[in-house]
Structure formats: structure tokens, C-alpha cells
Image 1 (tube, helix red, strand yellow):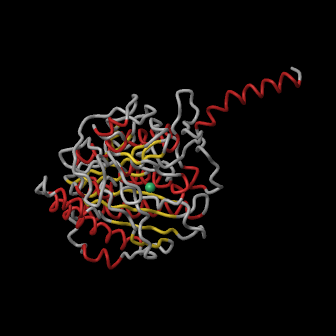
Image 2: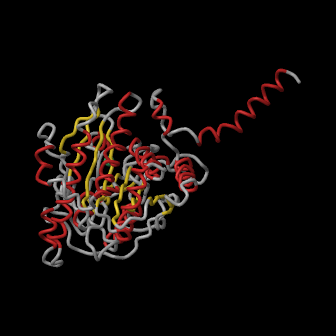
Image 3: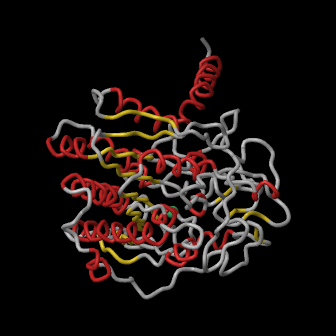
Length: 432
Ligand SMILES: [Zn+2]
């Protein structure tokens, strides 16, 4: 065999191996040499890891797929751990570029399914529903040929939004990146009788949106601006609402991560917040007599959860907890599930990826979530945690108001805006 032949054979072998290797590489890497980053999973790895965990759990964990697929046709996985009377819902990575929280959620699910006394106690008291990656396309969506999806400008994920290139010219839907997709975390339907509602149609103001569009908009097929007035165009958001309707969770915990605000690489800044859509609840009262009581119940429970989180993170010297300056938009999951009566809490973790803080982010997400579940297992009403302590224990970091959302910064008319988010704004987004 000549050198030339050997080289050709080696090149052919390398070419054959290349696609398989690409499957195991995080898109847009590298993230540095931190070991914790190595566990960030591709879609295929995530599904395999969850199925494997369910399979070896001897019935402690069940694997499921949500009713609506992502727009690239991927099933979105979730797991349920435990058989107890109360339910808790934990969702992560609504924003595709917030990767670390997904690993926290997978590790949490695995721990809950293990043989420890603590996990058994949680399983006996609770059903814990975990969606480790709500936005599977925004992380590493792929076309049929296996290459990464692109937006209208040719950019590839990970990115914040889902994948829906329907609107590239003219006005675009509210909370939508032109030629790319929707911010899933502005599209959660918040009225009990309207699970398919578009929460931003016909417009969003200080009082929220009172309409109920309840048809199924199939975003895997061509659709138009007019269809925004028929129902919710975001399958990932509809999926989470579906879970909330199936399980009626007493607590809904939404994990986010924002990587650009910490420079020292050691400290992780965690922020948390309860539902703040009181004005929407008040407005809903005219058409829904239980709206204010339901919201108050959810908000009170959320504050109890925040107290648990604050007391837990106080034990970790590398974590610093503050109040998240979040908005009042009713389609934010924190607000939507609060309006539905759940103790709905945002946990936003900040710290760099590819530095020491990457591992801390996972640990904090994991420890905070686990502590909430342990306390819920002891008492599903968390009566030992005074909701009035929440505002005492958790203070705003710097008095910064939230960046105005659409509806305040740019008027929403019939569910659309003239400009939409620009990329510059996106980079500075607070992450919720
Ligand atoms: Zn986020």
C-alpha cells in the first residue's frame, strides 16, 4: 500500500467519522476547558440520557414526550418522578442559549430517581415533572440534512428564540426575532379556560390581555399574521401549559441562565422573583370571578418558595441572591402560571461559561430545586415559610428597573409590532 493510498484511506475514514463527531459536539463551541461543559448534551444525547435514566429507575421515573413537536419536528421530552399527591413542575432552557440549567434539571431528575431515603421521601409525597430543555431547536436545531438551522441572516443556534422563520418582512409578532422565531417565555397562556390562547393578542397593556383565542395554530405549516388572532403560535409554550393543566402543580420553577454579567468567573449571581401580574389578575376579575384569589394564592406560595431558595443559597459562599427586576407581561411563565394559581418562581443564574462558575451554576440550580422539593415533600403548603420574609431576604441587586418589554417600549397591535427585537437589545437582555 503506497503512502498515497494510506493517506486517501485515512482521509476517507476521517470523512466518515466527521458527521458522528459533529453529533457529539455542542454547536458554536468551544466553551473553554471546563469539565462541567462537557456534559452539555446534544438533543440526541439528552433524549438518550433521559430514556436511559427512566429505564434503569425501576419505575421511579417515567419518560414522556409533550403533545406538540418543535418546528423542526423534534419531540420535546419530559420526565415524571414520583407518585405523590402534590405536583411540582420544573422547566429549564426556554431560551436555547441558556444551556447550564438543562444539566441541572437532568441531574436533579436522576437524583430524584435514586435509592436514597431523601429521594424516596420526595417520590412518595410528590410527582415531580421536569422538562430539562423546553427549547430544543434554539439550542441545536437541525435541518433534515443534519446541518444546523439558520435564521434569515444565516446565523446558527444556540440562540434565545424557538425556530420559526415565518415572518421576515414587515411587522412581526410580539416578542419575535425577525426571520428566526419567538421568545417562548412571552407566550404562556394564562387564562384557565383558554389553554391555546395567544397571550399577546390583540394587544398587551398595563392590564394584560383579556381575549381568548383558542384554536390550534400549526406553526409547522405555512401560516399568516391573521392566524396570530386565532391562537398561540408557539408549540413549546403550549406544551408547558398542557403540563400545567395535566398536573396542576403547586409549584412551578422556571430555570434561566444568563452568561454575560459576571466577569470574575467565581461568583454566581442568582436572582429570583414571584408572579407580578397583579394588574392582569385585577382586570381578569371582570370575566373570571376567581382571578384575583387564584393569583394571590399563587403569588403567596411563590414567595414561600423564594424563602426556601434564599435560605438554601445562603449556605453556599459562591452564590449571591437578589431580586430579579422582571416585567409584568402575563405571558412570562412566572406570571402565567401564577395567574393560574401555581407558586410560580423564576430562578435566574448568572455566571460565565467555560470558567469555574459554569459548574457552580449547575450546582446552584440543582441545590435550590432539590431544597424546594424536599420542603414540599414535608409540607406541600410550605406553611413553615413566611411569605412576608421573601421581600426581606431578597433585595434588588442595584435598584435597576427591568428593561421595558414590548407593550411598554413598543406598542403591540393585534399581536404584532412594527420593529421587533433587534439583536443589540437581545444581547443585553436580562435573560428572563
Ligand atoms: Zn432565559
